[in-house]
Length: 438
Ligand SMILES: *Cc1c(COP(=O)(O)O)cnc(C)c1O
Image (tube, rainbow, N blue to C red; front, side, top):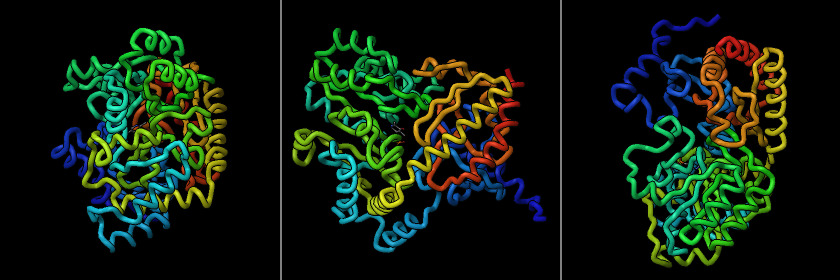
């Protein structure tokens, strides 16, 4: 039997100590810290392959974090690796229009016909921030309506009552966001049709855009009530505001294209990120034809980027979209996540732990609460101590989740039925640990 090298076994903690010395909180993105799971030193990850991720001590974990969403094909998919390597040898950034970025934009437009034009950027944050600038220019208005607990990146206006990692700072509003910026943002409860109607009745003439995740991934998974998105579409039309769908998590997650195509509600602008970059840094926005002419250099709305449309990201993104197109893994991902959901429900019932599970396709969240969970308030009502106990038991048994109760599990195309069995073999004990943690 292989023995662990005693030197190597200190690696996680040594790297973590060095990380804490040089980077605030030891991380470059707050949600990677263990603040959301009761503290501790996170394992330091050195590589991934398929559905697995490997820490600095050689310990292997089944990975349901998927880097917070991009890795729909799992880690180091051979087609993605080959495409990136091929392009890297040809130059990693060229500072001019490149054939791969043209093909990338065309592929996105083909998959999402409502995106009649595409502007590529480097992050989801930039996609949303830029789409809002465009909406304000198009309408000549200032106010943005968004929803409590959703996350749209870390631009100033989007850090008013935000979800995801930002929900752990005071009320989701970051220090350093000025009062003037806060006054330009209205935050409503998600899934509350009458709150939206009342707000738009009162302030509609000032509203540039209604911005929403059509399926939410940042207060854990939240699903829109039937008719809710159509209601937002009608309200936007009534007051002359733009409807913006932030599909950074959802696009290409449940189907070839956007969630919008299933909801039957078309926004004026879409924001994309995560999966479209195939694991490299990427984002995109686009939508209605007439809005294209407002963007520089055609128009007067400025937005730029040294790495926008980056050839490496284009190579990874195109390769990922091609594999998704050719293999259509969506039904399989949904079935595997369905097995996991059913198993978790059975185990929770037999342990006497109340849980609510929200799932769409391969994405879901288990909340330690009676539920149902329809909004940020419901998600926040879940038991923190139970999640912490559940999380650490799973980590110790080789199952890696994002370290927060407000994130999702992502079943990727690389997961197998065996992986689900292996996971369920660990979750029974994790739920028992949660049962003891009340
Ligand atoms: C992750 C995310 C963003 C931000 O994307 P970054 O690439 O991290 O800047 C924006 N909106 C949603 C819905 C997200 O999930």
